[in-house]
Every structure is written in structure tokens, then in C-alpha cells.
Length: 170
Image (cartoon, rainbow, N blue to C red; front, side, top):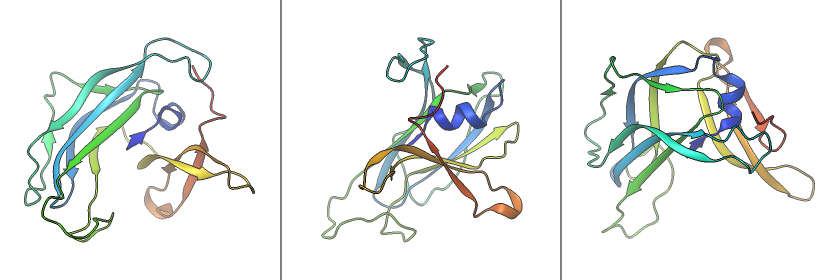
């Protein structure tokens, strides 16, 4: 999954955020998770002209154990920063060997998830960022978008969509 540049450019503070720790979360088929920061190094102002490159690896966990649900702390002397316009890319690896039924996304232990819970500072008014494809018109047209949960506190159910085709590129 990905927290796209459209979300980070609209909601992250100008000086970025500092990641303190990550709690990876998967279930029993999970085998590994990586979370990376991808940054545009080109300074492009038009979509599709960016030159993305990985700048930091937030975590690389290659031996997931579903019975361990802990935090991976970062060295405070070597901060990991995420800036507006960066992408945060998460990849999970699974092994379904020995299963005779499809594995579905869900909350049960035989279902699966791929969620990095990230602790960072300073606080922001966004607590969820995810890329997805939305149906954007009456003809079932689809387009890239992001859903950002801006609902900290009393508005936890408030979501808004960001159409990534109309976002400014800097």
C-alpha cells in the first residue's frame, strides 16, 4: 500500500514529520514487511515527470511472527524524516502454503492485514492515508485517489477523498 504524495503534500507540516517507531501488523500468513520513504528528486511540476527514489527504509522486517506485536524503535540520533510530497510505500510478504481456502482481508487471525502503525511527531490532523482507485464518474470511470482520515478526536468517522489527478505538483 501507499500513502501517496497528494496526501503528504496537503497534510504534512512544511518541516516534515519525524518517525519514532513503527508497529507492523499482519496475521498468520504474514512473513515480512518493509516500509520505505520515496522522494521526488526532480523538482518536476507536471504529473509523470517526477524522478522518484527511495531515500530511507523505515523498517525492513523479514521474519514476521504473528505472536509478536511489538514496536520497532528508531535511533533518536539518526532521525527518519518524511516531508510534504514524499510517498510512504508499504510492502507485505505472505505465505499461504498449506491453506485450502482463499485468504481475505479482515480482522480474524485467518484473514490478513498489512498495516504499519507509525508513531511520529509533531502531531497532525490526519491519522490515516491510503492510495486507492475510486469510481469517479457516472460511466464507472476510475481514477487514482487517496483517502485521508482527518478525524482525530470527535470526528473519527470523517473521511475525505483527494483526487490525485487534480493535485498540484511541486
